[in-house]
Structures are given as C-alpha cells and as structure tokens.
Image (cartoon, rainbow, N blue to C red):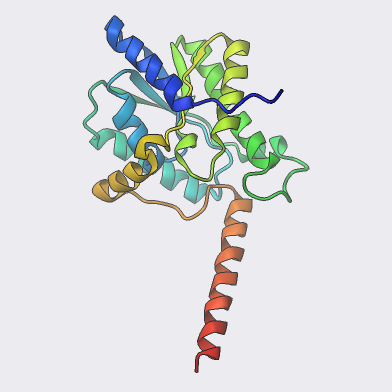
Length: 225
C-alpha cells in the first residue's frame, strides 16, 4: 500500500513548538544555494536556531556566477537583523564534483534524476560537515523553490541523518507563503535574483525556453498585422 505524502511543514511546526517549550536554541547547519532563497528561511528559523550557512554549490556555473551568488549571500547575512547570530561557512569551488555526480544524466531535464543527484551531492556534504563540526541539526533552503522536489529533499535528508548521526530538520519552506515572502525580501534588500537554477544545463534549458517564447511572440506579432 502506497504511503501518503508527509506534511513536512507540520513536522517542522512540531519541532519548533517543542524547542520553544523547552526554551533551547540548538545549532543548525543550513545549506544555502543563494541569498534570495535563504532570506525567508533565515527570517523564519533564526528565531529558533543558531544558524551557520554552508555554501556548498559546485553545480553553479560559470565561476563568475558562483562568486556573485556567494558574495550576495555573505552581504545579505551581514545586513540581516537576525534574532540569533548567523555565521557563514565557505567551501571550495570544485565543479568537477558536480559533473562526476551527474555523469550519464546530463541530458535529463529539470526536476529529473539529474536534479536528485545534485540534491544528494550538496546535502551529503552538509550532513558530513554537520557531523564533523558537532551541529544539532542540518537542512537546506532548496525546498523554498516551486521548482524543487521537497519529497526528494526530505527523503535524502532523512537517509543522511541516519548515516551521519545528525538530526535532519524536515521542511518545505515554500509552505506558509514562504516563496512569496522570499521574493518580498529579495526586493526589500535589493538582492540579485538569477533566472536559472545554477548548473550549465539549467542555463541552456532556460535560454532555449526564452528563445521559444521569443519566437512565439514574434510569430503572433506578424500574424496580427
């Protein structure tokens, strides 16, 4: 019998309520892909945790794009008035790690096994670091995006939690208006918002989509005269 999907927001609510009742502020290693995606998550979770952002994103290309997103993340943290302090933990930029992980899946599109492998790569690095550095919890900002599969992310997180012995913070940050709030905060802080997920393949897919939209628009324009 197939299990019904988990309500990850409900699970998160229960965890946060318990922390409030116990009056404890645990540490959280939060993988972040970019400042806009982290904005709402930090606003929401910094009330309950001492957060360290882990910036591990070897999927992002080219390197100029990677550096721009990383610097925007650092700048946002420095300006954001969090209830509890937020730290930043940088990682080496090695895009070959990404290409090795998704080998054979390059041709697959967005929301495919290619993305699953990418989630797994970044979450495993987060879980390993959380275990090594003694964090109480780990999680990722990725579920805030409407284009990211929260079920996959939480399943991967749960598996890695058991493997590395660190609690995974279940979540689906797009819930409760999270994605909309992140767009508001991005405007408020003037954050750079990219128009593709990060990898070279998503960039190519975005450009192809824009090209098709442009062709359709021009064809409609020519037939209306």
